[in-house]
Image: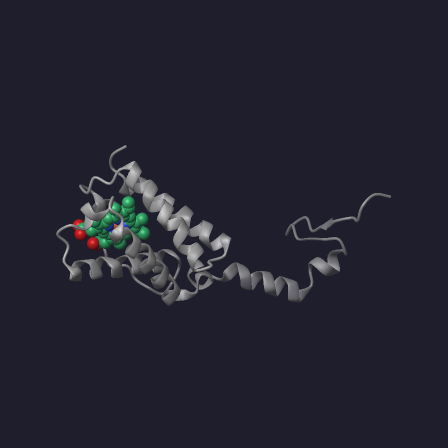
Length: 158
Ligand code: HEM
């Protein structure tokens, strides 16, 4: 007796309660492959979606009193240039057809004195921005994990 059996294909680890003909159905494999091969860039909605999320995040950061010090002395045009570099950086990192021509993260943030508290506020804004645009949680988590991976290059003081 007991509950329904779960059949598992040993090499590919596909599982089904109906048997091998179900877990090896061509439609099912085709669908899985399609999902697996989509880049984060595509899953986020491409260039326009990434640019919109980035703009929302940057607008927040430009107005947060804790961050005003970082933009002091930057012309409007310099801010636009930085914005474009951030969009390109994110698009390239997500696997999009964009080539980032800016400096690496350590070089471009060295000497700014970004500390752990700045980073915490940044990550709070960063976590809220995709939520506003209804980005599904796997993609949101991937973006946040990627941003977290940059922390060591950007934060200077504890
Ligand atoms: C606490 C968080 C952060 C602060 C306060 C901050 C601040 C800044 C500032 C002030 C600049 C201009 C530097 C200059 O003109 O010399 C800059 C440049 C830049 N930042 Fe950040 N940043 C932060 C996090 C990030 C993150 C997480 C990314 C990546 C997604 C990023 C990507 C960039 C890029 C691509 C540039 C331009 C690089 C270049 O000019 O070649 N920043 N950032």
